[in-house]
Amino acid sequence: MAKGNILVGITGGIAAYKTLSLIRLLVKAGYEVKVVATQHALEFVTPLTIETLSNHPLYSDLFTKTEEPHTKHISLHQWADAAIIAPATANCIAKLAAGIADDLLSTTLLAFRKPLFMAPSMNENMYLHFSTQKNLAFIQAQGVHIIEPEEGFLACRTQGKGRMAEPERLFETIDSFLYPKVATHSLTALVTAGPTYEAVDAVRFIGNRSSGKMGFCIAEALAEKGVEVQLVSGATNLTCSHPHINVTPVESAEEMFRACSERVEDADIVVMSAAVADYRPAHPAANKIKKSQETLRLELEPTTDILKTLAARKKPGQLFVGFALETDNEEANAMHKLESKNADMIVLNSLQDEGAGFQVSTNKVTIFFRERPPMALPLLSKKETAEHIVNEIMNNLKKKA
Ligand code: CTP
Image 1 (cartoon, rainbow, N blue to C red):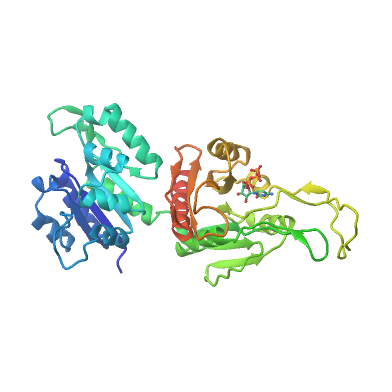
Image 2: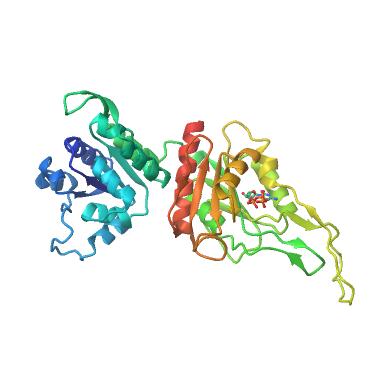
């Protein structure tokens, strides 16, 4: 069975010859590989070799007439599950950072929203140049995975950093990202989703607009990797029939806290994506409150912070992911939540971003880590966002293990 579709981009550097071995390794491991090469790349490697190794036609010219549709860059971006640019020249890195699309590869990259890996390869001075370093830092912060070049003997006959990572390392990086080496089938996750309803009286409640979609998508993305998921969900219209997901419906923050407390011990991964009420009516009425002309004052008391309480008792090996919904000082607040809630990752939703937040099927998030710069994902469907988050969870688990 095919493991997935990988798009390999080759730009004009001497290390292009090593990319041929990468194609071979990917094909041998069961990936379908399509290659986009720049005109300069084809000075170093031939179309015939690429086509023979990948078993697909080479894509190199934006306007070549083939049997495929003209919007090749769009179809390639839809086809691929991940892409790697190897070698990535300083020019190609700069073009991606600046959003320049002047050939098939750079155009494809602008349309690309899946995991993207880049293996820089260049002379050490070019690599260390402030411009290249700035571009690399920028694209890395946008979620591009940079596979650092190695030190050694360079093609320009000098010693230094800039040699493209060996094909085996490139292959391992992509393969272990898409198929984490942690035994996902032995993992258990606790996920919260949806809103909480806090009773005012027998028929009324204080709630919020959370649809639960993000949490359900995360539960499904985890289950797809074989993880056993306990999904504790507030009131939603969503259903889930995945055999690896067990849904426990709850209403209030207190019920959610109790359900989570009972399940957290066994969880390797805890993802708290529920929109939990911070306050609840202190004295909910047992019966329906009758209308009167008097002003009605509700006294509210704080609920238990589920994430903070459970993460404070974190066991070694457990990984806690929280969500943050912010309207201002987003980055500082997200970093603060990472610390104050003892979480390992915080997924920041900004309500300032169009297409992000409640009741929509898309999301735009930035993931904050403890020991890595934050990663900003583009506007994606909630399903795609969840897949990215779950991949990052798996990567973080590996580091913790
Ligand atoms: N959370 C929780 N229990 C609560 C409140 C929040 O477990 N009683 C979790 C959420 O599921 C989310 C994270 O904490 O993962 C952040 O929630 P958020 O509402 O953004 O932050 P608060 O801590 O409530 O702070 P504030 O409302 O002041 O931003």
